[in-house]
Image (tube, rainbow, N blue to C red; front, side, top):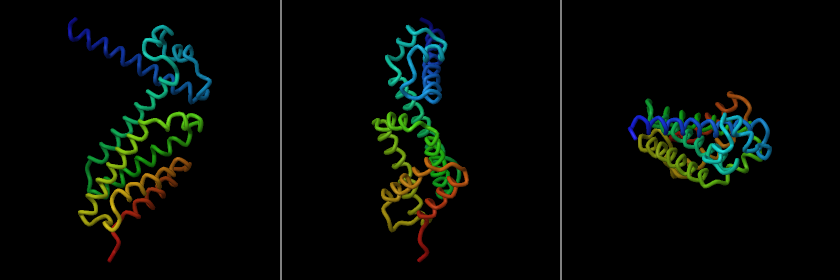
Length: 192
């Protein structure tokens, strides 16, 4: 088959897959985790049930795949921020702020959905990637004399992740900004 044909077919498959993932997530947010059927997913995605089953075997698998895509998107976004313009302090603050906003987004999620999605290995891997990203920024900041070096960077990265996880309970942007500020201030080098 010609290359253009293969690319067109693959693009179509990706569009169908995305429609399935997005439609399932929307249905779960509207109706709840256990109230969604494969028939509803097919209807929302605009495809037949037979086509749906060619892609996924059940709603749980679709939802876990959607969640993995969300995690990959978040990690990519945080990596772009980490690698962006600005000095180490600005980049670290930007990463911490973006992570707090991601954590805050879970506030609106049904608790059953959060429990269903978060024991996954993908969460553990994403947390490890994020911890390493923050650890490297802290280490770089400590070497530049901008951030504290009296506490190991691994411990400070854990401190950041645990502190900013609290953003999931915050209802306003101002509250998230205060939490990020307090967390970031805990990283600054002590005046000697």
